[in-house]
Image 1 (cartoon, rainbow, N blue to C red):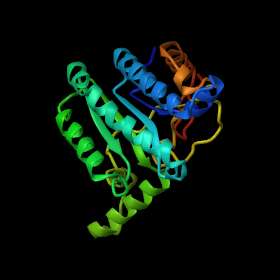
Image 2 (image 1 turned 45 degrees about the vertical axis):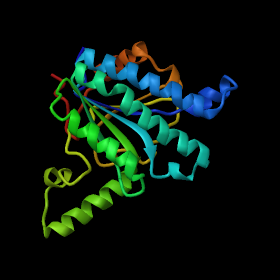
Image 3 (image 1 turned 180 degrees about the vertical axis):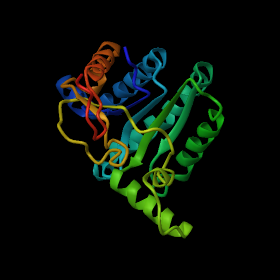
Image 4 (image 1 turned 60 degrees about the vertical axis):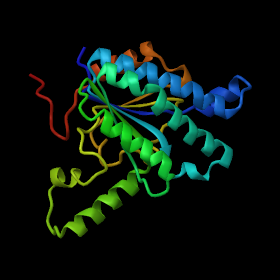
Length: 229
């Protein structure tokens, strides 16, 4: 198969999965973290070079305080738990999102792991954390203004986004919702989209390969025409 260079995933449905099992929402997030580990490893085996996942949006601060605190704790636990595995498996870790609202202690953990894994090149895990697509574009515009630039190309503008990495080839959304949810609005302009009804904790290697198989059936035009000869 033609393996996408960059896959982006909206990891949706943790809470609904937990509710279907009569479990607290926090258990759904814990299972979701396990799924991320599984999908990251399988993506690397398949040859995917970048995996971007939507972990916490700028709007998620509106959720109950207990759930927000659990998500912050889970993120910290994930970084500590996966640190040695990332080094062993050549995983580079990075985070895209605003850092001002996040606690200084968690930011310190993020920056430490980013630096620790900087030289790894098997696959890059980019976690969208305290992230919003519109916010990213506004922040990039403000960076351009601060730089004194008055005329800029699309390619140059991309370098002012949170992380300068290739645009996603394939966007996956779990739980069946038909919306983008303010995710990578600039970057997914020509991404192929795959929607599955499966909740994120149920998403597995087989479903990932099913998404990639669907991607392989698409003809990417990027606004042009396909030669039909």
